[in-house]
Length: 264
Image 1 (cartoon, rainbow, N blue to C red):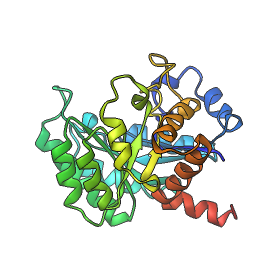
Image 2 (tube, rainbow, N blue to C red):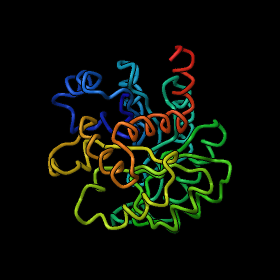
Image 3 (cartoon, rainbow, N blue to C red):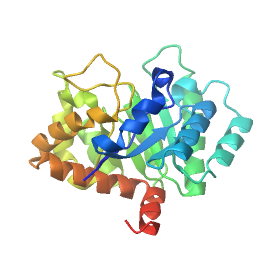
Image 4 (cartoon, rainbow, N blue to C red):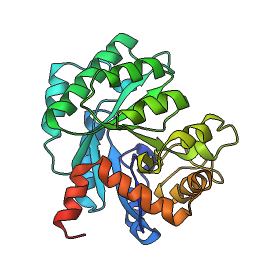
């Protein structure tokens, strides 16, 4: 069963030196699908261009909270137009980031987040949510839109927050940090998360798992995340690979439809 990396930034400058080499090598190493989320319009377009070149790569389009300064009607209109691309399968990476003090004001981040969720509702697309040190507001805004579904990427909230999202039909993304020694909340979150709501991510080139922490990340490292989750959930790595593949296809219906049309 192939691996589905539901969140990897191959459009990042971290891959400028060897992007094609890395992407071309993935299928032979068991990576079957990748979703590359944009962080603003330029990177969203770059992600879509990669998706055009590689059959197993899909893209999401969105404006990240750290990159949302100056976002106005022109940007929202351009984002809506970009989402018409056949291989853009979600709105993302969007959300709130209160960690970096030089980020745009919180109220402005919240406005941009809400507008993009509204676009997702309009276009019937899932959302990929970035939530860093903004758990209360991120949850509150997500709950204001009961019709929207998606994934909280690299989930770092409490088990109680996880349970609230799970009851509303959300998925939770698990990344390299679950392999770190200080991953104290992650096992508790995994314990309350049903197998059918777990997706796995690398966030490449970031969040590299142990034993390669500190080096550039890519989708070939995802088995380390899968193995840790399998251990916590009492299944084999092969079973966790299959489960997270199927979950990813449910999370992104446009990809699932592609596979159905192709007879897979």
